[in-house]
Image (cartoon, rainbow, N blue to C red):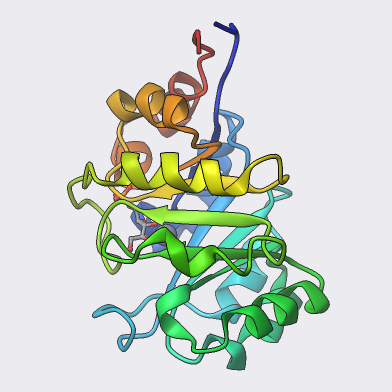
Length: 221
Ligand code: DX5
Ligand code: ZN
């Protein structure tokens, strides 16, 4: 058993106050999160609309944290360049949103960002088998994407374990997104997750920075 393990925490700004985004980001930065998670929704891939590159560009000017732009949009290849130009460090696309996943991942890397693949709860990990060397991050969705504040779907644990085994020694982050609360931190880390995304658990709290700090507490693993 190794000690002093902890996971990286990525607050999702979806649950922040969009009319006071810079203030909310500054507040959460006090907890020393590892990156910011930016949810981009188009009303087609998911039944909700959020933000585009203009807002990413504005956020980029207010924080030094790496930005992971989670694209929940159809035809993601049309917008990769815009999000990288706006300041995305990681661009995460859904495997379900493209018939040409390998080409899309290469496009993201070529544009200068790290390439992530998100999987909906019903999508098996097998779709990653032939792109394992083309990606920098896998995002396991533990809710059906579209909204913050939904309940965590426990089948994510098994999927994380399977993907961890598939990745072997590759330097790929394994991230989990949806319904993540304090109680999930340790079991998710034990299953193999290296980054936890949390929206409502962080921004819904009276002191978002304190929740980040608590989630980053080291524990025995
Ligand atoms: C859901 C988004 C998530 C969301 C998570 O479609 O991809 O990033 O913000 O929010 P919580 O943590 O509230 O489930
Ligand atoms: Zn997300």
